[in-house]
Every structure is written in structure tokens, then in C-alpha cells.
Image (cartoon, rainbow, N blue to C red; front, side):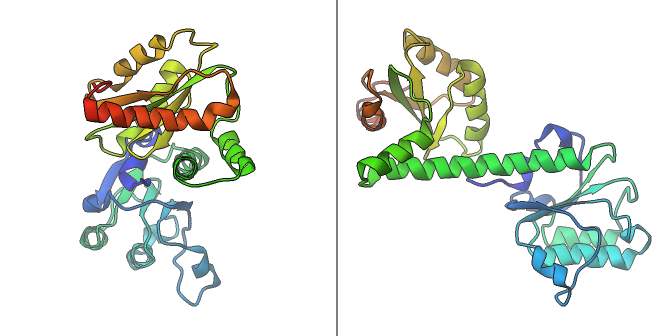
Length: 274
């Protein structure tokens, strides 16, 4: 899963943004935030600072008076594989038809926002979105390694310390597997789960894990009854696997395995499936 232009547009700061051109390019992948108001060429040392997947934030102050400069800049972004550009509307309220035609032809989104949106706030929000996605991907790699690869005792402990840095004294592990759910839904679902039960949701394949502190939640039913309220109606089809209860942190790795195994059994027998 990756961050797309359409995901960025869902940020609160961009709720009033206008899509000027490139509607068919909303599935472009965003890899980094960048900004420049000057066109660059291959002979320019700054050319090496741009990368495929860059999202540009800019004012177009320099290009606002010269249409050819504006055209060349947008063409430069397209040719270097930029994801999109977000333009403050201080100097340009709309774009020339030839620029919009070029952007539409190349499926390159040009987004216009009100100039009262702070540069720093926009950069921070988009950067946080990208960082969260990278951490989720890293977590999934760690989980896959834990569940499918052989490790020394120390290597396994290092993975567990990363996944659950403060393992509860008494706990149970829950694995939730979703069916027919768009991958992007998992991002908002993760946030909603944390808001409702204050437990980090560790993304894994088509679902994720919860390590439940049984010192806080005396009965696991409290969590299990809350999950459907979070899932419905967007996620009507899922299955839950639960590990044995444990009061030893040394059994944390086993608990992850038990939760997955329980979900597989439930999937076959349809026990635990909602």
C-alpha cells in the first residue's frame, strides 16, 4: 500500500482545494514533498534534487507573468515523474488552456489551494502521512519475518521490542482478517480503532494485530464488542482469531502465531467470522 494523490486530497487542509487539471492522475504515487518556483534543466545542478514521485508545493510567483515559463515548469514536473503539484492561488487563479491540456493529456494533477493555507502546515501534514505509511510497511515486514522466518532468541526479541515496546504483564493477541476491503480503508480504520480502544493496530496483510492489556481490559469481551462498532457498516465481513491468555512476555511471539492460527481455523469453520 502506498500514498496516492487522492489520499493527500483527503487531508483537512485540502478540503477546499480545486483540481485544475489531471483528474485521471489521482492514483499517482506520492513519495516525497518538494518545492521549487524555478524551472530546472538537466544541466542545472539542482536537477539532481528532484525525484520521481515528488509532490511540489509552490506559488508560481516567477511564472505567473510569463505563460511559456509556466508551461515549461509543468512540463518539467511531468517529464521528471512528479506525482502532482499544489499551487497557492496568490498569483494564479486559473491556468492557461494549453497548460491544462498538457496536464490532462499526461494525467498530471494540478491542485489549487487558497493562499491562507500555511506552507509549513501543508508540508508537515503530507510528510506525516508519508511517514506513517512507511512505518506501517516496516511493521508489516517485521510481522512477516516473525511469523515466517527462523530467528535467534535475540533477533526475535528485537523484533518483538519494536512491535510491542511495552508488552503488558498479562495479555492476549487478537488477529483480525478482513475480506473485500479496499487497502486504503485500513489506514482510517487503524486510526478509528486507536481512538475507540486506545490499542495500536499493527497492520498485517489484509488485517492486523491487537495486543490487549488484560490488566486494563479485565474482560476481552469489552474489546471484542467494540470492534464491530468500529467496523460497521464499511467492513461487514471479517474474521477474528484470539490467542491464549498469557502472563509471560516470553510467550508474545507464540501469541501472534496462535491468533493467526485461530483465524485460519475460524475461516475454515466460519467460527469467529462476522
